[in-house]
Length: 88
Image (cartoon, rainbow, N blue to C red):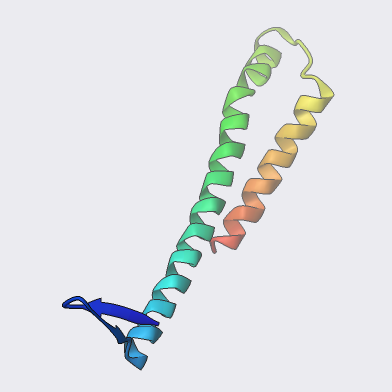
């Protein structure tokens, strides 16, 4: 690996190479964490978007479709699993 200094190409030092590798690993870890957080937000949004079924059930007894109940259970389980990956 090289760098340009004052218009000249010179090799990176061992320390610079190590720092770039560490920075790349850190960036990848941050991207993975953000992806997990985005997945959690997606599942939470689904729960929020389907809360009206629960409210309707409480207010007038209309049953919640089985597929919605199943998907809500899956969303909660996914959130729990993703939070464990984050160490929460």
